[in-house]
Image (cartoon, rainbow, N blue to C red; front, top):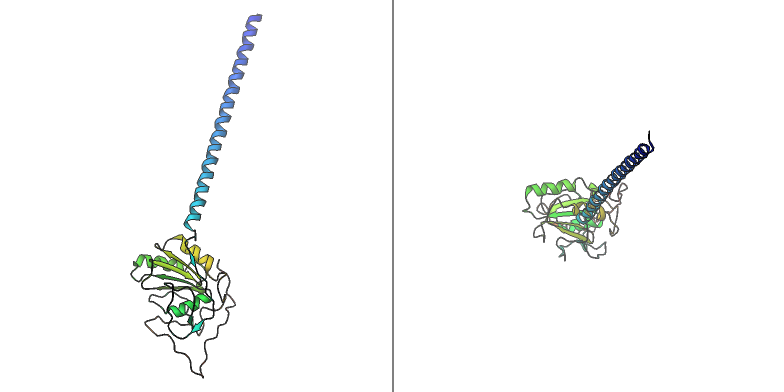
Length: 235
């Protein structure tokens, strides 16, 4: 082989190797670029989900007021909020349960003093939305500390309350409802956390079935408020 041919062959091999390296670099850049783009997209999607989730469950719209506990009375009470979130209340508390008729607010407030959540809704709310509320009420938080009942003249279709805190909602499926229950049921502002929301002294009737109980005579005793040993914070 002549020197010219050998030189030409070496140059051709060098060109082939150089071309192969360029292709490898392009492939590597394409792979890393695509991978980086996928990572960026995934980070963006996760970030959007987290931000959206935080926005959907935000409790910034919760209104809070301060009430002292243990203000027991026997008369009907005129409350500042609709529905009430604290203040004076009847000596008897409402049995925590789901009611299809209005209950006396004076009993419900006493239940909230014990840590209950009270979900109220307009009586004319469509049945499908009431069923959705019942689903949330029966599957979120502690059922021993859950009240639900219709309430006339509400400022919004649904209002969820705890002692000192309240949130107005338009959609029973709003995730803020569950977030409120988890934060405020037996929460830090509960005057008597762990006190029973049931028992023999609890009121089980609705407002149309029985009036507020009268003040007991000297021979009668007011209800005893005993803590529930199994009570624990909402999960």
